Image (cartoon, rainbow, N blue to C red; front, top):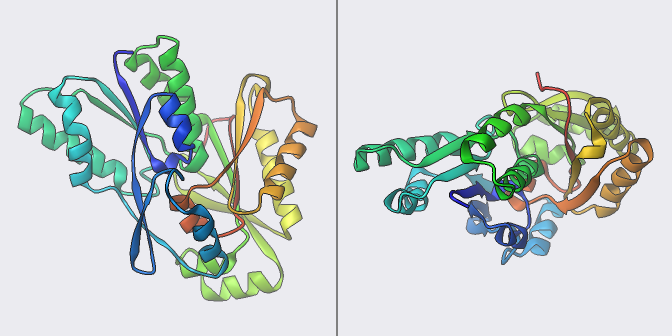
Length: 290
């Protein structure tokens, strides 16, 4: 391996997995009741406590990774002239990517030479970002060069399909994502939004259905409709608290398509802070995102 692969904790892959695959990561921060918690991919983070707070209606806040942190993380690689490939959380959802780019520009000026750092805006979040990280690590381990991995990422990140539904409309309202009236009316008639990540890496509500069962059916349907070559790929399912619903999604997918592998993982605290308890998401590669 002649370069280092790095991502951030918004990828929601398990800490031990990243360590086993020799993938570095940058921590994000979750703020709950005025106290800061490090999102370390559940290595030391008290996830059960966090879920309980979400169930009780708490509204955690998150912070983008600032330039100072990126400078500290990136500089040792420039000093040692070790090439680094960083897969960043979607610029459509956070300013972290722009801060990473700004940090690299500062380091280029300081060292008066080309920084050995390549940053890819994944235009993805949660296990969608994680799915890109997994594939990048697979390509690296097969001997692909950094440039070859970047070419693959730039093509396939736009083929990444992310289908999401949430269970807590009041959480979306508290986060300023829907109006108070829409949240109240929606809760009364059991409305569940269907959300997609678009080509700009932004969360876009595309429709709404009535009831949890129909929302699960819908994100499965959209995944099946958009997927390409399921036999050759891995699908990831993310959930917040409700693992039985995630298992239902896995069973439904297996009933409808033949897939190489389907894995279920908890949604990390940074992303779950914005989706609320009960959120579900499916990630796969399919048709190009608009």
